[in-house]
Image (cartoon, rainbow, N blue to C red; front, side):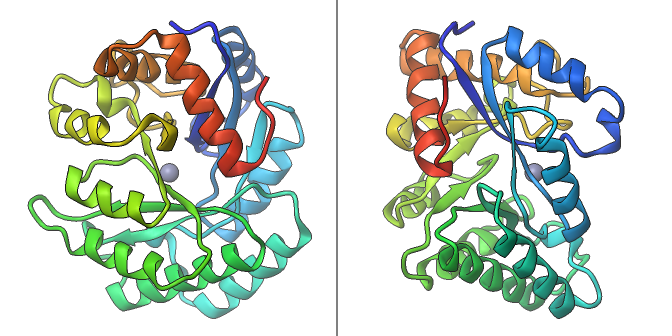
Length: 265
Ligand SMILES: [Zn+2]
């Protein structure tokens, strides 16, 4: 496990899974040399919670955004509320947003509208955007559409989080200047497609994340995930690149520090 400071670039500590437990989670983070965790919002209400939670520890930093599976009926009102929240300041990113064609909960064109609006908001405040992509097995429409949306916003920067797509789409996002973040799937025996993508992403464009409470890496698979466990994903990435875990920690933390504009020490 690395001794250099790590960053968990994506977790959901406002979820009920962590109720009453965040101080202990933060203690274990610190013990595992995880210097920062980006606490990602999935709705306007959640963006109020991420900011309040981050105020309880310097190790936590909040984002504000509306997840494609969480788009409310009154989308325009919600987007207006999101704009005023972000304008208040204190957030390190807009998201998570993106496209999810796996679930049919929301029409793709409504999802694209919400995604475009959040990209615009990110550019307006010079914040990075955190992008979720999911499609059905064997289909890549969501991946292609994400590429089209991010390509249409000049000056947009950001991260494709919990990457599970192929190497070709990864290359396209890299060409757009995006960073790619890998979760615990990198440690799964059946994660070979994700490892294949991780091999093509240069380390100066790679981050690691937990996506907690989901996707706990081996050896915690099936349990509740938490930021401390990102060390296992970093170790898997180190093995993949034939480098020391410390080197991976230093490099992925630098990418996170540059993208989110915080210090990691
Ligand atoms: Zn997420």
